[in-house]
Image (cartoon, rainbow, N blue to C red; front, side, top):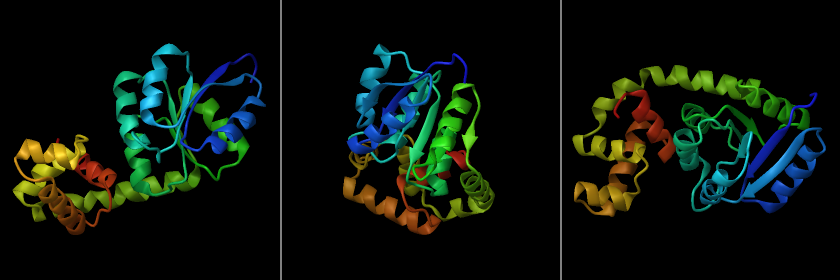
Amino acid sequence: MGNKKVNIFLADDHHVFREGIRILLENEEGFMVVAEAGNGNEVLAQLPEIDVNVILLDIDMPDMDGLVLMKKLKVDFSNIPVLVLSSHDDEQYVHHMMKNGASGYLLKSCKKDELVNAINTVTDGGTYLNKSISLKLFQFDESKKSDLANKVSLSERELDVLKLVAKGHTNVEIGKLLFISHRTVDTHRRNMMTKLDLHNAAALTNYAYENKLL
């Protein structure tokens, strides 16, 4: 590794997990955990004040999760590589994070050597996906090629809701923008997920981007 110095920001809501990762990584020459956070708001508050070479980012966090945070990092801190370290191996999550600027995606079940290799890869300007994640992402991209045909099954109002979901609005915010109740918005969301066989907001967002609805 030579004289390379890597300042690491750990973003995960589990204190014990962060402590374990910090101890593991700081045993590597040149690696230093310079900041920690339990949610996206804490990450955004600290980033302007510190020198960071890579962010290790979990997806499941309170207040602001990794899915929302990744979009904000892409806009405001695009110079800092983000390596996702998550328990989710669902291709929807992988696609969302990579599409929104992540430099790599690893599962929390990975071994230390792979984590170290991934950090070195993304801090050198590369992209890192392990073999199983790469295969899932390829299969996901192939399956989405036929999704455009499904778009005609959505009503005009459902398309309006879909576009606003993809822009990160909550049900309450969408209701205000469309002059309908948040319960009606929730009904439209559930109907869309049923029609398109999608199961969460990240999947709806991916669908909107893939089909150029924004």
